[in-house]
Structures are given as C-alpha cells and as structure tokens.
Image (cartoon, rainbow, N blue to C red; front, side):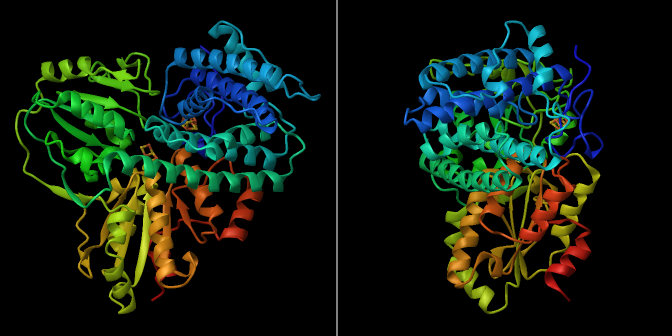
Length: 549
Ligand code: SF4
Ligand code: SF3
C-alpha cells in the first residue's frame, strides 16, 4: 500500500492543512492517489472535449454521464473502493483517446495530462499517480493552485447534482459543456488569477442552472414538496434505512418493498423525501432514522435491519453492520454488498431478504414527529402572509442556517445559534447541518413555524428562489433583505453552492466551522473585500452583529 498522499478538499482535513498518510474520512492512500490520477485523466478529457466543442462537434451523452459520475465518485465520502477507480481511470483514458481522434488536428503545446496514457495495472497507476498530485508542481503560484482546486471542487459538487438530474433524464448542454471548459482551464498555464477567479464565478452560475435542472427533475417526477410531519422514532418490524441524496433509488426501493412488511426509514439528507407527494404516498415510508451522517457508526452499530447508501456520506462500516450496509450507484466500500444497475433496472432482492432475515426493531418507541417540506413552492404559497408579517414588524429577520454537518466540536455553534435566534425571526434551513437543531421546537411566528426545512443541499436553489421572490416583493436586492446566511461546509457540494451564492452577488455570508485549507490568504482577502465573506465567531457575537441591540 502507498504510504503517502495529499488531500485537502474537505473541512475535516488533518490539522486544517491536508491529509498526508490516510484520510480522516477513512480514505486510504491508494484510493486518494487513484482519485488524483482519475482527476488528471479527466483534465485531459476536458482538454480534448473543449477542442471538440470549439469545432462544433457534439459530445455524446454517454461521455457526459461518465465525466459527471467520475467526478462525483471522487467527492468526499462517496467511494472507497480501489477497483472502482482503476476501472474509471481506464475508461477515462479510453474516452480521452476517442475525443482526441474526433478532434483530429491536434494543436501544439499539448498539456501532459492530455498526452498521458494510463497503464493496465493498479500498481503502475499508483506509480504514475505521483505526476497527478495537487502539490506536484512545487513552483506553481499558490493562488493559481488555490483557484484551480476551488474550481475542481466546485465541479465535484456540481457533478453530484448533474448526476441526480441525469438519472431523471434532465440534461442541459450549457451545464455539461462547461465541465470540459473548466477542466481544460486547470491545465492552461496562460490563465491569470483573475481569469481563474472569473471561471469560478462562472461555475457558480452554471451550478445554479444545474440545481434548477435538478429541482425541475425532482418536482417533475415526485411533485412539489408539501409540509409533512415525519416520525423520528422507531417502529416495530423489519426495516431498511435509505441514506444519501438519490430520490430515485428510494422510489425504486419503495416500489419493490410494497406489501412485504418492511418499514422504510430515511436517513440524513434523505429526510426531505417525506414531503414529495409521489414518495409520501407509500405507507411503508414510515419515518426518519438517526441524526446526520457523522453519527452513523454509532447509530448503525449492530442494527437489526439494513441500510442502503445511495450517495454520500458513507463512513467506514463497522464489522457489526458491514454485512447489512448495501451501496448502490457510484457509492462503494470494498467489503460491503453493492446493488448494480443492470439494463436500466435495479433489483433490491438481496437487501430485502436480508432485512426480513434480520427481523427489525422489536417494539415501537414513543412517537415524536417533526415538520419538513418547505421548498420554494410551499413557502412561497405563504408569500402574502410573510410579506404582511414583515411589514407589520411581526417578522424582524430571516436566517438561512444551512449546509453540511460534520464531526468537529465547533459545530455546536449552529445549534446554539438557532436556539438563540429571537422569537420574531424565521429560520430557513437545508442540507444535513439542520440535524443540529431540527428536533428542537422553536415555536411559530405570524402563524408559520419558525423553522422551515427547505430540503437537501441542492435545494439551496429553492432558498435562492424564496429570497429572490421576497426581494421582488419588497422591490429591493437580496442584500437589502432582512436576511442573513449562516452556512456550514464539509464537502465539495458546499463549495459549489458557495460559488453559486457569490456569483449571484450575495454578500456578508458567514461560513464555518473553519475556512477551507485550499483557500490562500490572498484569495480569502478577495472574497472578503468583494463579498464580505466572514468566518463565524460566536452565536452571541454574530447575532449581535446581525440584529444589533
Ligand atoms: Fe482528508 Fe477530507 Fe481528503 Fe478525506 S476527503 S482525505 S478527510 S481532506
Ligand atoms: Fe451532508 Fe454529507 Fe454535505 Fe447534501 S450528507 S450536505 S455533508
């Protein structure tokens, strides 16, 4: 096994600097190095892909799908399987060669990543991965590296959303073509700090479009989310817990488990599923299990049922449940069973049989319920009441407290912040960070719950739609609204979303629990000067700064 690696793409990176021997996330050095080589190959794919686009030669959908899935599989907590990456590197190499043939006349000055050909074995790939590491060029300007990595992480995040939209047959040329432009740009030594900064802003805009596409895909397939009470306690009987973000996998499993006496629970980012009419209609979608992703090793320990991981965040399964944790799609853990799609179909029989064999919970817990389902459609159906309440002073301020959860102790900030918000304020929340406070009862204001769960991280789109509609109603810009964004990040989808918010000109965002290790002091200063981006401090200080006395 390789003993060295370098990765600093997520918030829990070692010492807030970089993971160098193995990942704090559980990724070993081989996987990290193979991921580096895969991204290197994808940059070469981007180079020829952009040349093809420049010549007006369309790129086929299968290639787009592969680029998206390959990027997504390198996102934190998605895939930990060396074999998966060996296979993807070979495939990326093949696609790169095909695109090269397509472009035919190749220009001079071809970057190394475009010329490179992948070897056959993992051993040789690991040797070659040295050329692909983030820090390989010691002389590279720090700010250029920082902006290139920011772009790559933004792409990983956007790839996740493009993947979910593609699964529901939603596709957009502008979104997909931008992958090649951006990947190629990371190989272009002529680009300045300003060029790369502008490309990151362009990624933010394209990611907004991508999230819009996904919103249309989800609401088209499953209806508009509506306010719905969700059971957060256990029910007696066999069960399967569905985690990750993929609503289609949940739907397929609901269809295949109907009438079989199996309860289906959502977990973590899957909780918004309960608000969608076409998903909540299944009576055996009984509730939500546990907290956010970082608690899974404790919460799944020795569990008498199964877990299906459809996307991130997967942690190393303990022996006590690794035989009952199934992965699907691009998620993978080397020793855990995987459900493959064959000819466009998934057969969940193995997980269904295992759940029945395990028997499930032996008794009902006393019931507790929480409310979800406040996407843009549901929230804006109350627009008149909300506007009236703001005008009459019943609602003083809105907070968007959202983003990723994680393991660092500093994340208690978000619980405390939510608890301390005054009664005449409304909290919009989204993504898995909400598990820090979504079981607290925060009361009502102007006849509405004070805590409105907008959905998954991709539903940042919904939150932006809500903010834009309010700005429209008050005839002002989003920055003039009585609205503050207090965000938490962990992985690269949050990077993509942050770029989207900045590209829309949204200012004074508070970000925590720590700032990304890949952002240099110079780039941070630009973000501070241009957008007023701030690190979180303490809930009291920040509330005071936002609301005044
Ligand atoms: Fe470390 Fe995060 Fe990279 Fe995992 S994804 S190796 S925790 S920086
Ligand atoms: Fe959470 Fe992993 Fe980011 Fe979709 S599930 S938000 S961390």
